[in-house]
Image (cartoon, rainbow, N blue to C red; front, side, top):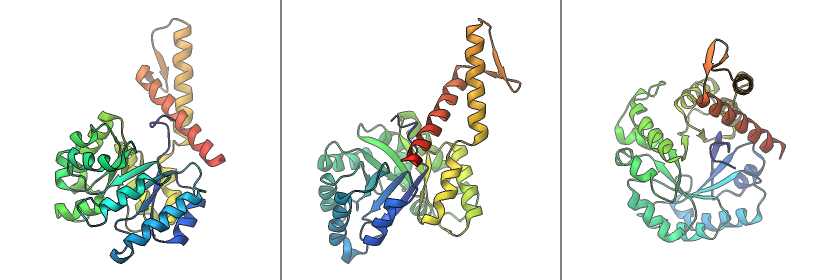
Length: 285
């Protein structure tokens, strides 16, 4: 499935050390799971977490969900062992935290081989080097680490995320230039559905493919926000029909709802319909 069609609406962090959480993830309606060996695992559980996660992945049952493992940084005492373990796990992607440059990606690729790599974008240097990181041949996706980024930038919290807009924009530009998946950061107040919906709407408007989540209670809101709406699907169908009819009749310009429809609008319309179909297929599965 084309990466622009494959849904990444909801990407849920799950502790790699918790059997119950690993089992629950098999039945949650999420598009992808980040099995976390980093922040969600205490230092004295790091080694056990690798074994626990490896056994859960070997047992399977995660269906069409994209399986992503976030390892510890290679500059930590656990990172190299994590990378070596993930190389042999049944996973789709390895996620590297605190990526500052393409050299960090090179170091991971030297261990994990051909496994696609995603980068946690969460440091000021990473923001400045986003284009270089995105252009790495094994880079397949960006995950915004907005909590760590806000800490490093010493920003104040604002619901409009104005202090983070430059960083979010730089990563979006880099990801879109290279055709990468890019997933927005977490929303910390997991009981605040209204606030989550507002931040999802902002991220969707900006061009993010989906959002990372810290709690299953956030899944439904996020899935709805990043899926094509009924109105978008209806408009896409009408745009395609009008454009094709105009071409068949040899006329010059197609118009829908008083607006001109060009090739670029039709391309977007086809992507919307393909994503809607992909979501339906995942739900049916």
